[in-house]
Amino acid sequence: MSDRVFIVTGAARGIGFACAQRLISDGHRVVLADRDTDAGYQAGKDLAAGSDRAIFVECDVADPLSVHNLIAETLGAYDRIDGLINNAGIAVKGGALDMAIEDFDRNLAVNLRGAFLMSKAVAKYMVSEIEERADRSRLTERPYAIVNMSSINDTVAIPDYLAYTISKGGLHQMTRAMALELAPYGIRVNGIGPGSIKTDMLASVVNDADAMKKIKQRTPLGRPGLPDEIASVAAFLLSEESSYITGQHIYADGGRLALNYMIDVED
Image (cartoon, helix red, strand yellow):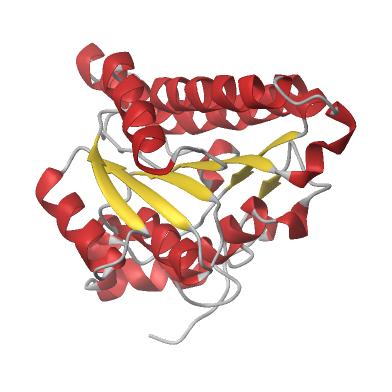
């Protein structure tokens, strides 16, 4: 078992839950954070399975006080934070001509402001721990890492999900900027850009033959991805196996971004 402790936001279901599950299976301890208290407490209970390897803390990542409380509860429970997965996110539909300002602000508040608040709080804790060490040359002895869950839509765009696309593009650049800022401390910051993944957000598509055909046509591997496949990338980026990787984005998209044409698929 490991002593390392990770926070995963948006962990009540989907990719966030899969990430928490993978980290626990790797022997780490995880704090699951989410606004959905019912699903969050159940997820924490299921993953802990009677152990102290997982706890749930209600958190609205867009609220500074809520983030502060999450950090305090994490340190109160485990006395350390080794990594963070900024996974909490929403996708509010609307384009430039019809999107309400409130919807625009809400999407950026969760996806971008939330990731900023979480990263800032966790990074400040990490830096304070590092600065207390007498020998700064041995930073790799306790590796710290932050992973931002972005999207292929930080590079390509969806016109009727304007704010979502903007938030993911901003998250991409925040990953790069924070990686440069925190590199002198040995803190690594990377991002993951999932393609079409089988989560609740994709449920309506999975049950629609025409919509599923479109996903297959734009995905060279010919299928949607699974949350576990994204969790594997996150676990790698938080591990010492990726100790020389920072400021990067890994696109787990089945080859979608590399595709410049539609492919033929069977119905």
